[in-house]
Image: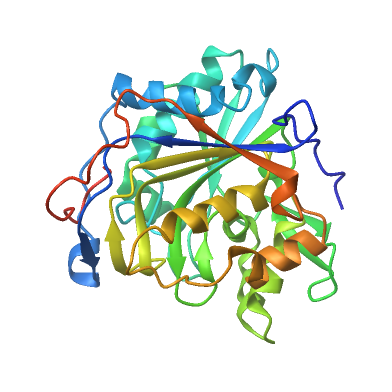
Length: 332
């Protein structure tokens, strides 16, 4: 089992930091994502300057990219391309490109974007090609790796439900690991933010075992114990507030979170979802199995006293909700 990375995003008292940036007004209504309207997706455009500014600002609020990146670092980004459908089903490609550009601006050497989608027979390459991620990353000098038959390394877990699993090698063979997460409720695991993001980095034959034997939330946390990201970014500009991770109620939350601690990021992500009345995650965030087991395994903070929420300023501000519902391709 790899030695956990030290969280570099802490305050002077050693508390983990989580920053929250309101990227625009929250939507007043929600839309319903269904199989009939989830498929279409526009080709990604270059990130607008405001998006790059927002990503930089939310990271600057916890200490900045200078705490993360050393000259020449090999950095792996793990996004969420469980499918090729639009956000929040999957990562917003312009956001990913903005992140890559900022990492390179701060001295990163080689940047790898690695992912695999769903269970076979779904083709990860097909789903990722739908998003336009290959050409988008190529335009900023990043390499895209589709986790396949030759990218796996056995890693011991901290729990005994799995004991060991095979993890995608690029998640281990890097100087810094960055998780780029969506903000979602999940019909099986209650929510899917940063702790569950590791599932796409687990070899499919081990991934399938996640859903058998009970204790799904605890199993997610055990899988999460195999790697430790150095930076977690949660793109909650659009979010599933009920249903998920593929279909359900989609809300324009317009929030972005950043942290070096997955538990703190997920706690604040849950609280963002709970701002909306239709949210299906209604309990105390600390009571959910993913969180409780992750804290027991020592994957991050174990109480609210161990982290601090920082408000990152943005020109867009919070303001009153905007009118109308969001279209199926919002966030592209």
